[in-house]
Image (cartoon, rainbow, N blue to C red; front, side, top):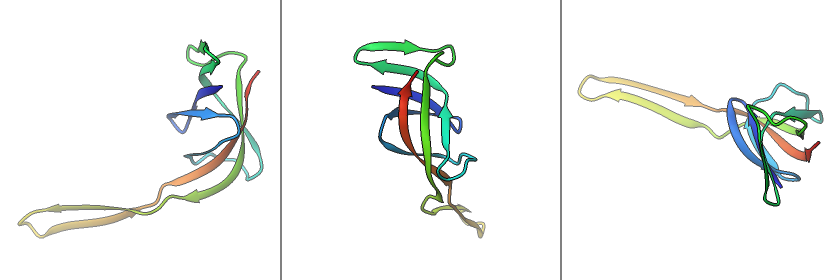
Length: 102
């Protein structure tokens, strides 16, 4: 069984019992979070929502908050002596999917 859930403006394919990194979610470590379900597939049976599937919840437990590895953004214009270097570390929340179902 798997589901497509929405978190942080993005859609993710999740399965129960696995770990995933999402955009930062404002929740305490150890708390449970419900994610809206867009699509569910269970052994060939498919349910789609408009926009969300009714009576189906995806419950996840917050494990940790952190930041991804740094990426370097370097912009320059040739022959103009214009250079700009920036770094960025995207915050994330690591979740464990506890259950998908009613």
